Image (cartoon, rainbow, N blue to C red; front, side, top):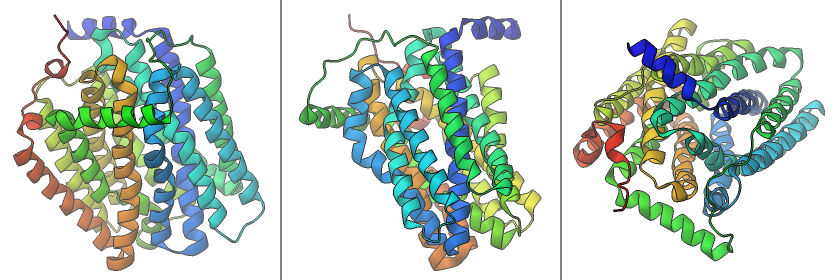
Length: 417
């Protein structure tokens, strides 16, 4: 009976949502594959863990600075077109990276500058691309669409680093050309679907954009469930951002090259995809809050295991475990935030959330780079793992509204009488 119901729900997913998810796959493939190779090249050129952290900072700053504008843009214009223009900007940046790496460079500053420009494209892509599946999904399959979007993203995380690692062996500049092709394919897929029919707000100036951003932040702050979920994710990944150190771990701890590094980065996608596929077949329905807390705790234990691993297989398994746990927390948060937000505010709220999540990932890379420079690679990873476990204990105590959430349906805004 459950299988029959799952098949019926699967058939309800609109074709344009399926096309959008395919576009998300190619976008994720290019983004994660490219940043993996950039990290390796920066580490090969400098031998500095700190530079790996600064690379994350360069990617994050545009997201933080532009969030007052990117959310309102997603609310006031066709989100499909916003996402498409952002993909064009990312493709252009990848092409410039291709040209620079092909020139056999010796300096990393142009790489940091181009990654900052890449972050500008990401800043506009994030709220628009995350809101689109919810806009176009029927109410009874929203949770399934969120899980399928995670599957598409995680599939890109698997294929991108592994594929780009092999391409890197052919020539260090060619992964960036592959990224250009992937972004272009994603953009062409977006043209295959029509514009969003969601009602848009009137276009206004910069001051209103800042007011919109403040409104989104205020909405999150007033909701203990949203604030608790987003801030827990921020702290956990901020402390447990060991993935940024994979180029150093692969080189110094495990003794593997670009192909091995690609597979380690792909392990993150493999673990997350297994979980995401499971959730797309059987979405999480009960004990949502407790599941979130438990998943973040498992993420912490997986990070500790990665820090202690000196064997490639053990590191690979640890990455699968921590990424699988992270996929559960991402699935829950990615469902809670849009479902608990009124439709007309989703762009603003998701843009503010994007700053938090961007902060947790990219600033987590900075934290890992700084602690690795101070305490070594092992010390940095262990610090992050134990810090994540401490965060779970603190959030369980101070955010009971979050830990007590039983189902997604109870967080939906109540319709006005």
